[in-house]
Structure formats: C-alpha cells, structure tokens
Length: 213
Image (cartoon, rainbow, N blue to C red; front, side, top):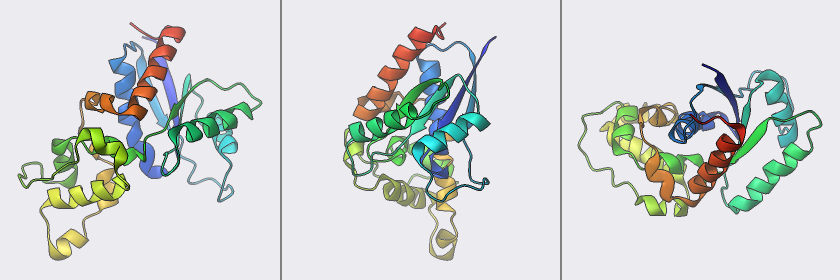
C-alpha cells in the first residue's frame, strides 16, 4: 500500500493535538493510503526567536519532506481569512517547490476543537469513571469562546475531581495534549465554520491528487 506523508507546521508545541484530527479527516474523506503524520518539531534547532512564517515552513519541509503540508495558525482575535492570507503569502515566498498545502485555522484557537467530547476530557484528566458535570459549551458556540484554552484547562481540572495540593500538581498542559487521542469521531465539529472550510479544502485536494479509495 502506498504511503501518504503529511507534515504539520504549527504556531507552538501544544498544537500537536491537531494530528489526530487531520488524520481522521483524511480517513473520513476516503484516503486509502497508509498515512504517516509528522509534526515539524523545530524546538531544538538554533534559530531566531521570532522566525518568519515562510522561513519556518521552508525549514520544516527540509527536515520533514512530505506529500501534503498542513500549516496551522490560530485565528485568535483576527478574522480567519486574514490568517489564511498570511499562510498563502508565506508559501508564495518560498522559491523551492512546495507540496500541496492546506491552511488549518481554528477560530479562535485549536482548543475549541477539543471541547465537545466529555468522555475524552475525563480520560485525559485521569478520571475516566468520573460523573461530575463538566457543563461543556454548546458545540455551535465553540467559535464564540474568548479563551478556549482556559475553558479546556478548567474542564480538565473539574474532570480530575482533585482538590487542594493534588489539583495544583495536576499537569494540565500535558493532559490537554492527550484529549484528542481519546476522540474517535470528530464529525460533531462539522457544524463549525473553520472546520467546514478545512474539510472542504481537503476533500478537493484528495480528489485532485487521486488519494481516495
């Protein structure tokens, strides 16, 4: 079976949680090849503290060659379209050939795409049998949350059912990285505009490249 290698370039290390989502999207849209995902980890390299996005993409492709490139930027307080334009402009600056590229721009940040699965949050918090209510936001309001990261961290603390010193010692950042691992089905996110845009673009590319079954 032929392999499909993809590389994910992200804003930061916490955005590695996007890998299971992207792999699911490829599978859900008919990709029949063996998928080999890579996160472009540039943390150990000697590089400028504030590297330009085009330089970051260029270096990532040198170290992690691929058939498909995903470039992530959180929309944060900007319009999604602005971030997409920033990514496309950065890619246009690269002289060497760039593989097929897809913009991954959650509104406002990637943690919003993890706030819909109670079971996964409980598993990641280390208390899968917990029953305390987590009061997750309605999925159609996830893109309206001002700080999805803080919301996710708070739900992980609630799900852990810990208190006092034990709660303070809970490695919330590490637990947040594991939430996506416990989600088998990301289809509920198909109500979100940024996720719809990502999937629509990816469907077109899968068809164009003949990666479907």
